[in-house]
Amino acid sequence: MIDAILAAHAEPDQPDATFRAIDAALADDPGHILFTVLAHHPALRQSERCYSNRPDAYPVGGRKPVTDSPWMQSVIYGGNPYIGRTRHDIAQHFFDHGLIVSLGCESILNMPVRWRGQTMGTLNLCHRAGHYDEGHLPRVHLTAQLALPALMAIVRS
Image (cartoon, rainbow, N blue to C red):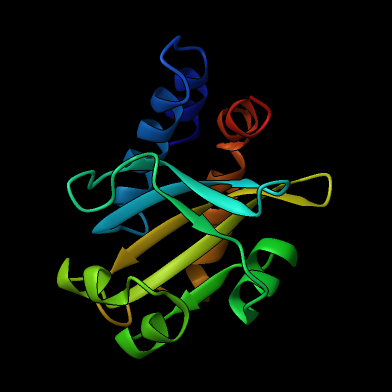
């Protein structure tokens, strides 16, 4: 897993090569139906979708505001991962919960990618109800940090 992502770092097709390798690594373990990567633009108070395994439903380039909601405070500002285990959890925090559920997803794992005390972006995995738990966090955290060079290139551009 790590070797494939590190090899992808050397590919000229960035950031897509890195995000595709991360997508493939996380598809195996812990698994996902929907996988997106969002870059955080603090000066604009926005997050930008820079990768999606389902571009038909979640196209690259979509942006959402970064608000002062409890989820944003915890994940974006606090750097804490979030696990939502049910469709109710998703509905509490995500305005697009209907679309998420329509894709067969009723659980979510959001993992911030951090550098120097700042969230550069998030990896977002969605699956069937109850799929994610705390046991998945170490692997997803390590994998998320391997997205850092690709996210830095987006955020700094």
